[in-house]
Image (cartoon, rainbow, N blue to C red):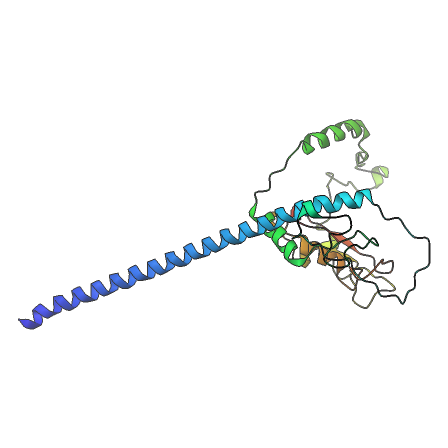
Length: 268
C-alpha cells in the first residue's frame, strides 16, 4: 500500500520539478531577450547621437571649406616627400566654439589644408543608423525622369528601330528563314565571363579591370549598408587610396547589378 502511495507522490514531484525547470528556462530566455533588446536600443541610440553630433560639427567644417577654397599649386612636388593623409575629424568638438581651421584632431591652427577624414567609429555609427532607419525616397525624381524621357526621347526618335527581316533575302533560290526570332544574350559578359577580367599593362599579375560590386560583399537590397563593399570594389588590387595622390596605371570598371544600394558615407 505504501508503494502505491509513494508512486503518485514521486510522479507529482517529478511533474513539479519539470514545470519548475521549464518556468526557469522561459524566464532566463525572456531575460536574455530583454537584455539583447535593451542593448540594441542603447546601441542604436548611441549611434544616432554620435551621428547627430558629427553633423553639427560638419556643418561648421564644410562651411569653412567652402569659404576658404584650396587651389592647385603650379609647382613640382618632391616625389620622395612623405604623403600624409588628411587629419581625422574631431566630431566631439563643440560646434559653437570651433574656430577657423581649428576643427581637426591634430595640427590645430593649421592653414595648410581643410581636408579631413571620417573616423572609423563614426563610419560604423552612420552605417548602423542607415540600416536601422526606414529609407523612404523623397521628392519627385520619378516624375522628373518621366518628363525628361517624354521630352527628349519620343517614339519617333527611337534609335533601336530595325526593318523587318526578309524571309527570302536572295529571292526564290534562298532558304526561307521562317518566323523572325529575337535573339538576346544569355547573360552579361562582365558578370558571367570572368575568364577575361580585363588586363592593365602596368598593373600586377591577376589584376581585375572588370569588377562586380556584389563580388566584394555588396547586397543591393536597400536595407544593408554597402558603403564598405563599394569602396573595397573600387580600391581592390593595389589601387589608389588615402595614401595615394593619383592613379593612372590601374584602371577599373565597377558594375552595379540592378538593385538599391544603401550608402552611408563617402565613396573613394
